[in-house]
Amino acid sequence: MSAPDPMPRPRRLMFLERESYRKNRLRDAAALMPVFGAFLFFGPAFILTPREQSEGGISFWLVYFFLAWGGLILITYILARALRRLESDPQEELAPPMQNPPSGEV
Image (cartoon, rainbow, N blue to C red; front, side, top):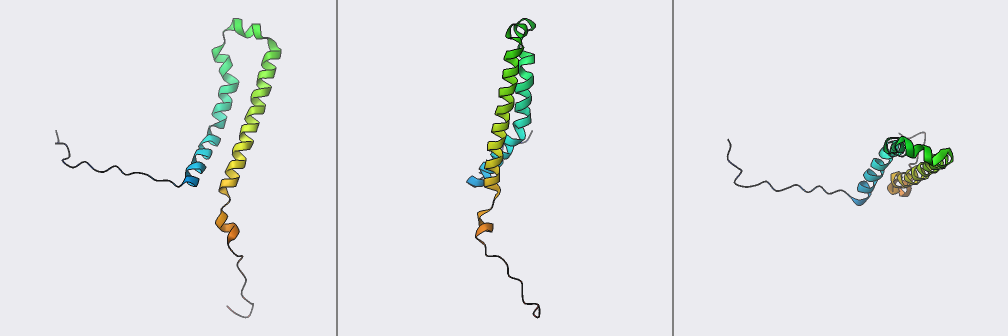
């Protein structure tokens, strides 16, 4: 058995810039969208009993699936738009375009 360290190591704090943190969280949210969609579509099949499924009728489930589908599309659009805005680098837009040297000079 080893003795405990007499001097504990200082914890390294990991610092992420605000933009990179947001970018990572938005990417994580976009990656979880298929899981969220599967939960919305298949969740009621696991939760409801056969008696409750027959009481709702087909019209209720058609409306539910249509709203879930539309909601997923809307959330995905918002995430994609936010990711596109964060992915565009403001430094690239401000940099002057590179000029080609004259053909006689190298």
